[in-house]
Length: 266
Image (cartoon, rainbow, N blue to C red; front, side, top):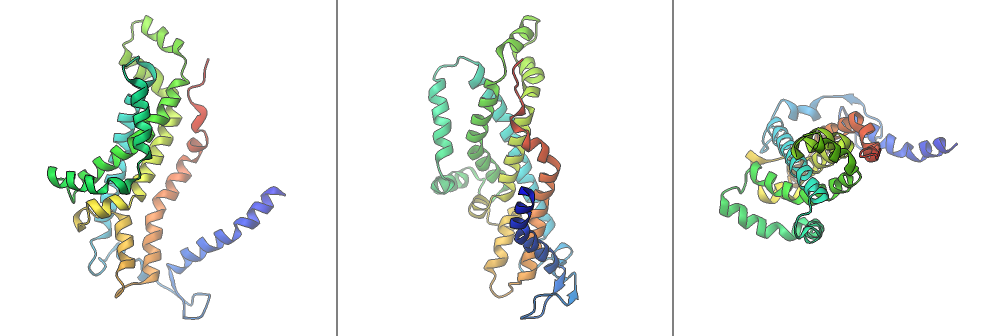
């Protein structure tokens, strides 16, 4: 019964997405609801550059590099920093944890002017590398705080037993602790990738040139071009942009649902 109710409530959403998909492969006369002609014209951006726009594949590569490198940096730095905060009796530990939360609380827009000036000064303005560094620094507080909580659930006895057997602290972290928090690492990686893939403000402000353009900026540029705006093409590019996210969710949905399955005591 409950499943039927949820299915009924979700039906308009399914119909909306189905019509969106059909609309990208068809033409519909003005005032009509059903399409009358099949066409690939709205997907021509895959093999032909749109007027005044960079190639979609170079933009997609920029987006993939941006999201992937950001994710890797967040995972590497967060996993090491969170372990140190969880296990090492370091000075000013509470102060550092509070600072992490304060940094995470700052909206991105409040840091744009300072970030813009810094990137210009170091020569990284309008480059993918500059945006990657900024995005990584903004995502790190969240990653450190999340992983620190998972490290706290790993019992000390497991690490102490390995250290007494002669394993180094780095080996204990790499071979024993990290596998226990793998669900959290996978989930954090997915969230970081999606945050990078969907990021619009930072690339738009800090890398506005065509050489460093990402898909979110490319898609927004289609709306801004009033003279050549094509709704069907806009829908097609949007579907192309959203496809990797949907594929990623289908592949990793089990890991996302079991995010809190790591670090079990025993």
